[in-house]
Amino acid sequence: MKVRFHLPGFASHFRFNLVFTEVMKAYPEFFREGVEIASFYDSFPQSIWNGGRVREGGYADRSFIKTVIEAFNSRNIPLRFTFTNPCLEKKHLSDKFCNMVMAMANNGFNEVIINSPVLEEYIRRNYPKYKLTSSTCKRITDPERLREELEKDYSIVVLDYDLNNKFDILETLPHKEKLEILVNACCTPNCTRRVSHYDAIGQQQIAYANHVRKYPEAAFDAGRYNIRLPEDCPATSRDIFSIKELSTHVSPDAIWNRYVPMGFNQFKIEGRTLNIFNLLETYIYYMVKPEKSEYARYILLNNMLSNNVLTLNE
Image 1 (cartoon, rainbow, N blue to C red):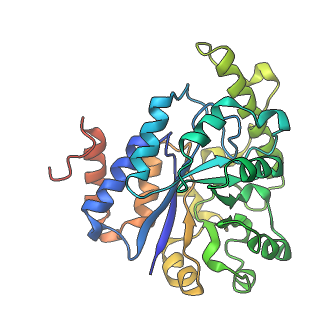
Image 2 (image 1 turned 180 degrees about the horizontal axis):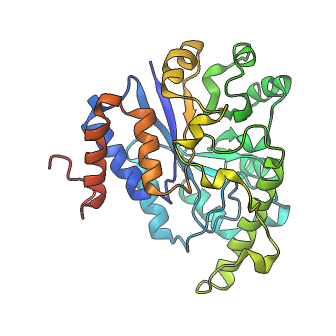
């Protein structure tokens, strides 16, 4: 039995994810049955194609990009680029930075999460080695449309999380092995602003990418570009504990006792912009055996605080 987790932040949480990967290798007895890392997903900060979450935080140079690609690929873990910006136009396809990243990671092993038809056609034509994932940002909630999406040439289709616990629908779907379930969604279920929120995020990502190219030393202010994300969105303050109250939440018990027996084995944990303590608790909650959680937490934190990547036997 394989229970495959797609984890956030190959760049934003690079060191933590690297340590977590090595702890999994060194202490397999800590982890629930069948757990494996299927991919790490993210984008580098100035990626104009990025969507879903705004990725700010400076400028990633070629050296860092190469380090990230080699660190995870050498451990047999693919990167999945979150190129899900819904606001892209043809003029954005020639972006030098995103094309450089695609060329550097174009080894037939890495993947792209896609949303925009314009970008999808471009990647299929210019970078055919990449496996493509259909993004949850598409907001496909109609069962028939979802079935059609599962028949298309995608390696994975990420389920809209409003359908997470609609078992009457899930049971009837084909290709359950390629359907990815986002288990810890922080968004309010059935939120009517989700599409407009994704659009605002996409616009802000474009503005940020352009800003950091022109003014690499100047702080970015979205307000200067007339971009406003929803200020009253409760999702921004939800943590691992509060999301458990949402109807879209999928618990570890449900994963192993219901979803996996039904044929699902792809699960996504969101958290590219979570603080490290929230992410730590989320990983432990989903992937570590409850009776091993305290020791696993100690080992992970001990290694995060050390000067070396690993001090596993201390």
